[in-house]
Image 1 (cartoon, rainbow, N blue to C red):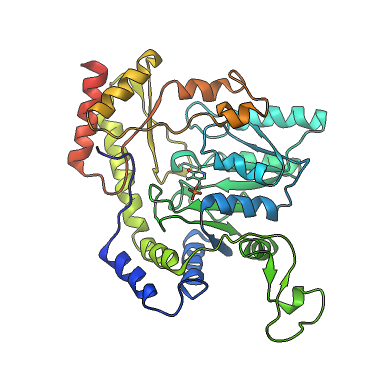
Image 2: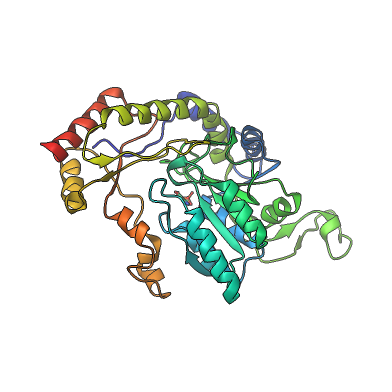
Length: 383
Ligand SMILES: *Cc1c(COP(=O)(O)O)cnc(C)c1O
């Protein structure tokens, strides 16, 4: 089976992890800060907090923005469940804004209409999670302008998008948000096995997230309620978690950063090749937004004929093509149906779900494998 995504691990990556295993520190050593510094400087953000997953990063990001019971978090339905669950972890309610049919990202017009309505009814969200679906930035200029008008905080879920650019600048620089989150799961652009990072330009948010990833504990006397009892002293200021990244993971991530540009270049070239090879087939190719240069985490086609969606998917799997579907609309998951959502709530997302297929795209995909994918698609769709 040709997988839809997978990691590339080089000999340098393996040597970097081995060196950590032979060193004094397996956790809380020098590798995590070195990885944070490398990512922060690459994406032009002031602060970076490495954690054990993007899910954890989203959680501490919401906590740092003081999201809690009685508050609302909004995101779009076409995303991984973690973009919404982070609100629930904090005791907040979650609601959704439908997608733009061509980019699969949150639709700024739908957002504007829903914000106007919410302003009238006094149900404005405290936080909006803007997802960079497939690695392409949403319309952050418009989204941040709308959010600012209502004092709403913004988290960019850029789990797909390290290495992408928006308006000529790197995604992650938080120019249009409070916090940006990356994932380093093996199918994403670079990997630390499990891992994630929160980026911000706000020193206060960074300090808070730094504490929250490690039990809410500080060793900074300036933050303590009284002078330290002695050199051993620390204080727990609030309830935090153990979301720390290990040294092995950070060493792997640091080494993977050396390959980020190569990975992105290969993904972009494969996406261009798909655009050309799939021309004329009864499917919609992904649309490219002006001002956004995608990292191409996913290449998603949508079939003209939704009646053949399932059979096409099955035919491709039977031909050894590891197709997938990103994502089942989050509001239709049983957990969210239990919160009151139902079929018909977000029609554009549901329509997308009836046609979408993710075809293999990763930096290790060979030209020959890509030709196999294209041949199998042609066979399934036009015989
Ligand atoms: C992968 C992913 C996450 C969660 O990432 P983990 O590192 O696996 O926790 C969150 N949001 C989106 C959009 C993702 O694709």
